[in-house]
Amino acid sequence: MIGFEYYNPARVVFGEDSGKKLGSLLGAQGVRSLLLVYSGDFIRTLGIYDLIRETVDDLGIELWENGDVVPNPSIELARDLIRLGREKNVDFVLAVGGGSAIDTAKAVAIGIPYAGDVWDFFEKGISPEKVLPVGVIATTAASGSEVSNAAILSNGEWKLGFEDDRIIPQFAILDPKYTAGLPLFQTSAGIADVLSHLLERYFSDERHSDTTDYLIEGAVRALLVNAGRLMKDPGDLNARGEILWLATVAHNNFLDAGRRADWGSHRIEHELSAQYGITHGEGMAVVLVAWIRYMAERKPWRPALLATRVFGADAFDYTETERALILAEKLESFFRGLGLRTGLSEFEIDDSHFKEMAERATRNGNVGHYELLDARAIQAILRVALESGAKEI
Image (cartoon, rainbow, N blue to C red; front, side, top):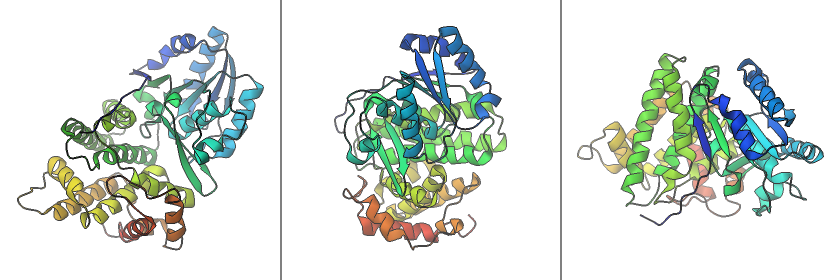
């Protein structure tokens, strides 16, 4: 078990009607000029817009807004919002939605006080001198960005991340009913995203971190159970609440304790979504299954352990390689049960861009920590992904 330091200042307000706490949360921040970042008109349908409007009016806060966020958010919108924020002396950014809105808000929060171009933080990894506070009202159970220290944005074919503890939101309002109106595909892609965050942390080469191992295994079990309930009854708010909380648990960095997470699969998927516009959660379903099959032949012990502890693959009956392959089959079946694709051929993607994608992913060196992946290894995993998903599971 390796040493660690855990820090997360986000205040999580969970439960039905938790939005009623917005006034006290904003009041505690001393907000004078607020920029609201969201995507589309759904926040009006859910009553969130009226809640925000009434709250800021009561507190005497100036409100500015933009609802143009799209999946795989781009740096261009962030730049526009930074200009607006500077013009209106914005001192707080409120995101309503999922990871796309939240990550855009985080970029705006570091960009408004910065004299240069906000992409510098993502491309050059520079540290901001000042960061505006961010708050979140979550409407999806997926990215966990509402409690994370990371933001991911796209710039053309580049999709890069930035990490800094100061972009962890000051608060996150999590009301399960806000997720109830999501289309089935978005719900399913969100579940896959949550699972991907759990598995990236589980796939560590650290052999002595039992507490975190068992916490992740329990979270995976809870996700599988509640995803099944939600597929049977999309209106099950208890299942939605469990998954919404699991999204937070999976990505608040608590499950990094005592180990070094992998993140190689995420780096590969970022290239897929940048190149082809794939929804991140569905992209992770594709990459995770392929990554596990690739590792089954090279370094199977971690996937094999999960197959035994969560899916009951007996170590006396199966080799590590066989158990890792069982895990890939179980997860592929789970993802397909969610209605997600698990092979690149199902997206009509071929191998024509594999080489350039792999070279972009490794431009700063090999990726992943469970096993280092160079450009050739990434191309090999993408080829496995090309062959997956064609058959019915």
